[in-house]
Image 1 (cartoon, rainbow, N blue to C red):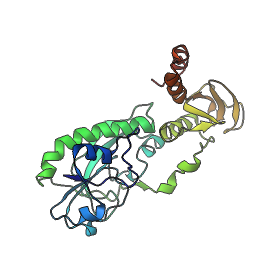
Image 2: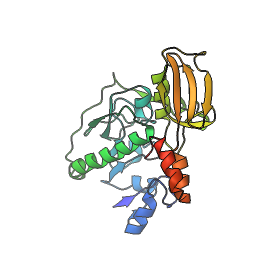
Image 3: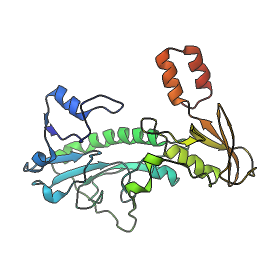
Image 4: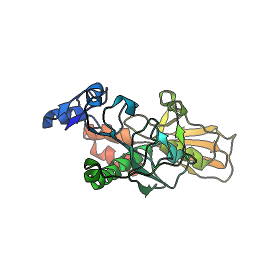
Length: 270
């Protein structure tokens, strides 16, 4: 057994465990991608690898990827955001063979699960991890024995999004939407380890409609206070609740128990 960590894996434990550190602690060999590619009869399993893999570069053909979505839908990146933005009812996890395309190889297995009405990018990502662990456990012996069969993906229903489809470095909310679409944006961009969506300089956690007609031009921020931001949408005035998750974490570190209780009462974050 050996591992090939992502280039940015420096061996430090953060919110995501370090594969490099885990391998070191277990005495598992760490190799570069070039070294791995030269191994004959290799079984290569990719999970969120940071480079596009080209089968022609490998000596082995036993190459698999565990993708967070249900290809042919959502091949490629941002699979924790686009299903929420598009108001999909479900998503899933798919182990597939690696071919010359992007997440387009034959499907080995696939699971589906329903998206909740309050799903965020962060909660969806963690659901992907849990479902992937279950699916990999069920399929691993067959993959190891090279007895899995695969079914080709449909090209007719294939969808994908480029990295440029969401500019996370300059993330902004399109306010000229109805309330439901604005809420989906907030939830699709909510992943506190990376970013939190903001309105009027305030991190927000969700959007609820409160009037049937907007009291200003759609997209206008009407007012804000310590608890959230009021905004006019296409179908009424809506309230965007302040995201208190980082506040709660800071208060926890400081041991401010009374303040934690007050903040938690105003937050969906637990």
